[in-house]
Figure 1 (cartoon, one colour):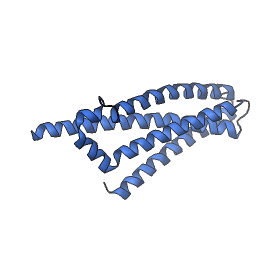
Figure 2 (figure 1 turned 135 degrees about the vertical axis):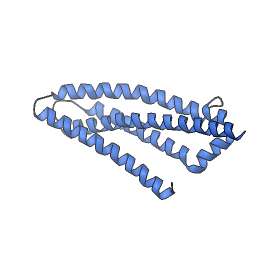
Figure 3 (figure 1 turned 45 degrees about the vertical axis):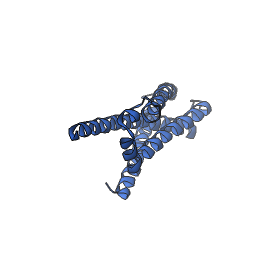
Figure 4 (figure 1 turned 120 degrees about the horizontal axis):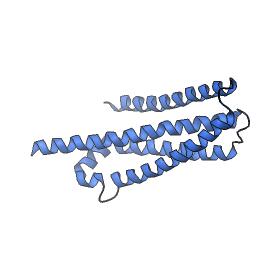
Amino acid sequence: MSNTRLKRFLVWGYLVEALAASVLTAMLYVAVKNNILRIEQVVMAMNWCHDICTRVLTAGAISWVVILVLPFGLMTFLGDEFKAMLLAAGAVTEYVKANIVAAASFCLAFVLITKCDGKTFDLIVTATIFINLYALINIFTVSKNAVDLLWLAQKYRQLKGAQK
């Protein structure tokens, strides 16, 4: 895949996550306006969502450090050649960027939750819901990235084994 095509693919991925969060936020807004849900329930769910996402992000960050950095991590077992291949392809940079976006969305969600009173569906509540949903979607993306990296590592080991 060419560099330009890869960048378009990555930008499209971030846009789809934002679009999905926007659609879900709009659905919650309609549900609150039609008295299907109360705003207090939505805000409480967003607080739970943020709590769960924070724990998953912490575990994920530790996992990425183990995979990429520590001497007993995945990168060490596969050798310098695999690490050089990922670095040359720019894959590690993209994985790190994805984790930074996820961490930034969680931090912004935390700031918004502290400002959210949960009485009316105003701009702060809307932003809180959107950012929390975006962060939740990012958890799935970061998890998929980790699975993809492990799959790539497995394929690399199979190919290395077949060459011997």
